[in-house]
Image (cartoon, rainbow, N blue to C red; front, side):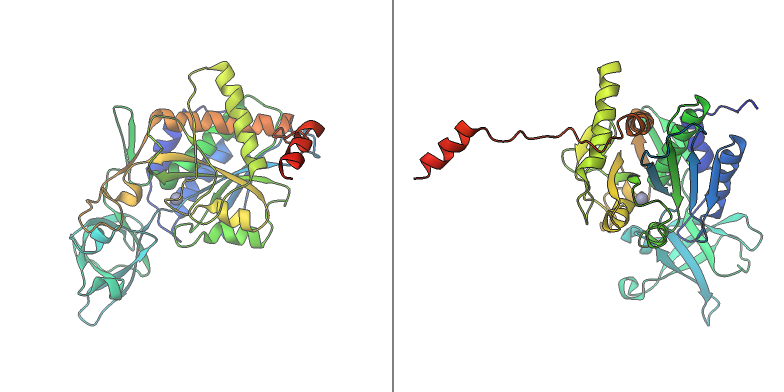
Length: 375
Ligand SMILES: [Zn+2]
């Protein structure tokens, strides 16, 4: 069967065409499954709705430990939960939404009883920090079946100069980059094993990833690479390439896992000398890498340098932040896909559990020098 070809940008635009919030990832999940089915890539959906896809040619050497790339399908939003005694619709944040969105009349979309998304606005409640809720006023009044997801009403996808702007770059860029790499690897029939994982409810505490760890869904010898967009911090720049993420806000990652990325980067740079990448501990947020890291998997990460993290123009805690689209550079996104593909090949070809970071034994002369100068 001839597979339909999609460009990496088309896949990202495709995923951006629907809305998702923590616990409400079904529209995104359906698109991912549609692409996997169309391209004949085998996958399972676990009991919690995480999707685990696998490119594994028949002739593959099963002794080689697998490599998995993880991204999450949700993005911070709200959940409308109840009508109060005045028939006002109440909603609570799901994940790290900007504080400014709680105290201004922020335009939103809410999923109606009929499944379409309708326009409305947030109306602040008194004492919003303690109440942790907002009111939702609909443009055209109607009763909503509860609970219902709410997302910011922002442009879903646009390209301006070198920037991709989206309501939910985090983590659709992760999902789309993994999918693109997976599809290209399957298309070119590369003889290597690649696992692609799309999880749920990351923004409310890494829930999908934690359940996968608890259930040991991936074999424990799997190298796990979290693929995320991470807020800009000093020392990283948009346009300087994807970031090899050596840790997040909570944990530092594994050097052997990182070495796969480093070798892949070296290979890419030997083919294209101006291929760019950065290396940094991205502590602007916690990513799913921490869940797998703590569960004993060899873990590291790839991050796209992200502007307007979680839709806040000046950070989610700044009360003056505007609610805007997130953005990444096109070349960082495309570079990330190259890095994922090359890492799959490196993992398969150099899978000898030998790390190349070695320190020689200290020679006798030097040893004696230390001993004597210590007297
Ligand atoms: Zn994220």
